[in-house]
Image 1: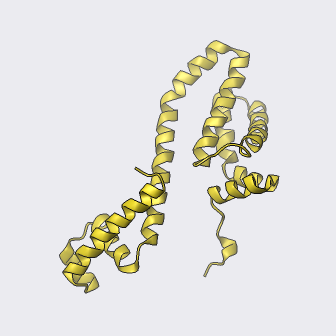
Image 2: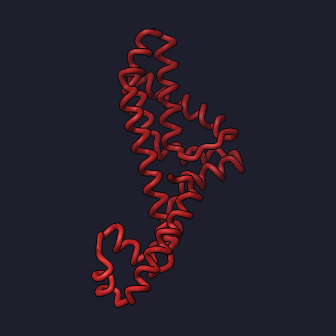
Image 3: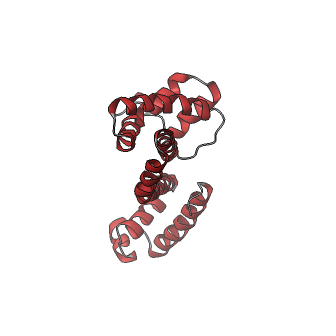
Amino acid sequence: MTSNKDISPTDESLLERYRGTGNSEIIGELYNRYMHLVYGLCLKYLKNREASEDAVMSIYEQISMKLLNTEVKHFKSWLYMVSKNHCLMLLRQKNPEVATEISMEFGEDVHLYEEKVRLEADLSALEKCIDRLGQDQKKCVIQFFLERKSYQEIHQISGLDMKKIKSHIQNGKRNLKICLEANNVA
């Protein structure tokens, strides 16, 4: 049995609370979730522990200010881009030619990472939308689309009438489409 204390607030709810209050503890909680990733990214670009640690702190200060006035939908991917740009800026200050080479070298990695983050966000939205379906719709949709069961197999498992199964799947699919569109998922 879990209590509400065991459930961590989402990135989105923390962002909303931070924008509403400006409380640095809230942004600190959010940043701590990804600080190790920011450090790893900085280390990858800067190749120096001390410089990477300084960059992690500078990025925290930078996002604390930006988030008060910036609308961010996917914090993790936004933070990645802010961190990458910060590191590239530091490298450009030292040597403009090296920074351009590094930017081009990691360009494909950045694209793949952004695609993965977008896909994860889409899957998360799909899971939330499936959870919002009625119990029978949810069972039928999961069995038909995710478990690849036929109408007959769903009928044998659930005991529901075939027409009801088809109706639940059709209505569930429509409800998912509406929910996903409301969450800006194509």
